[in-house]
Amino acid sequence: MAPPDFFFGSNVSTKLEKPRNSAMRPNLQNLNPNKGRKAAAGFSLIELLLVVAIILIIAAIAIPNYTRARMLANEAATVQNIRNITTAEVIYWGTYGIGYSQTLPNLGGTGVPSASAAQLIDNILAQGGKSGFLVSYAPLVPDTNGNPTAFRVNAAPADPGHTGQRYFYTDQTGVIRQSLTAPATVSDTPI
Image (cartoon, rainbow, N blue to C red; front, side, top):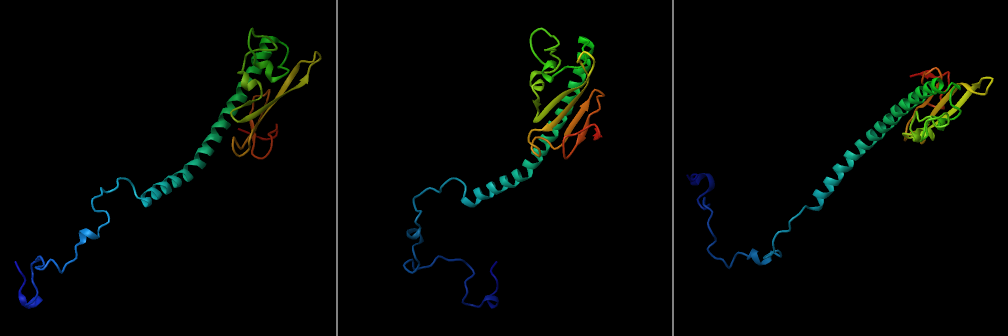
């Protein structure tokens, strides 16, 4: 249905008609430089940049969370390693009857279990480092035969702020203590 002439005027056509004289209109097909070429398949530069930007934003959010989770996992593993050392010391005391071990490697070892290689903890822990922490052991209070009647274990992050934040301490009582700023001692807060 065509609109009335008074609305558009009498000279306006309401149908789209082809121009009658093709010489008056330009040939747009000759002006197209891509004539005869297939369209390039792929993504535009803007699309690729947007994808890269989104990936970088996600990485900026995820990496600090991953680092924090890894530190917490290292700290939890270290607390368990300290418990293992304390348990191994109690077993060593009862098995060999010579007090606590003289060194941390005495609790590890291979071959036939003995006082110098009791095989109560794994050899990596017996060497003093595991799960991003450095573990130090000191026998204390020797009896009249020179056998330790007490011991101290300290664990410190190998790379503070990256492998862990807390420092740990325990002794023959089995109470594990922590410090956030310096190596833990017997006076620090228990876990």
